[in-house]
Image (cartoon, rainbow, N blue to C red; front, side):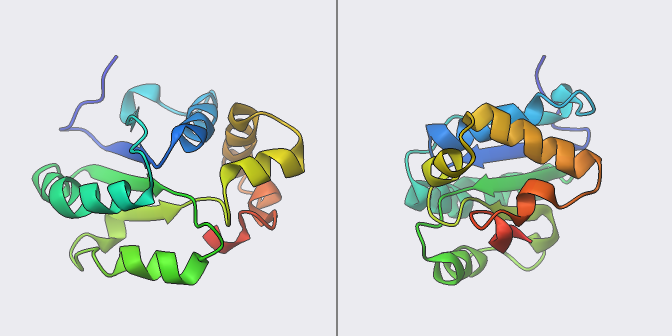
Length: 146
């Protein structure tokens, strides 16, 4: 079932396949309405996510006012610098509907640290959100997302 652009919904734009798998794991949580979340295909790198944000997603957010946008990227150890580069292109009227998330370095480091699959990591993050607990979000690879 596809997402209705005219009802509240979330678009997740993953940088790569690892981030897409994390998002898919998050979506496995039973309390999530899968018809309200659309995980887009992997973009092929954070510069392409940034480019799509500037060229496409900004216009679409204005057109579809009930859309929230999650940009799921690798920070590659450049957290504040990379985050600022993205925030510099977020239009002020849309900032409250755009979320920039990702692993401090790469999702592969998070996966290796935890010893579980990307999907299980995503599911555990969703569980923590549903319980309103910080849990895995306080892992050193994710803490900067706070």
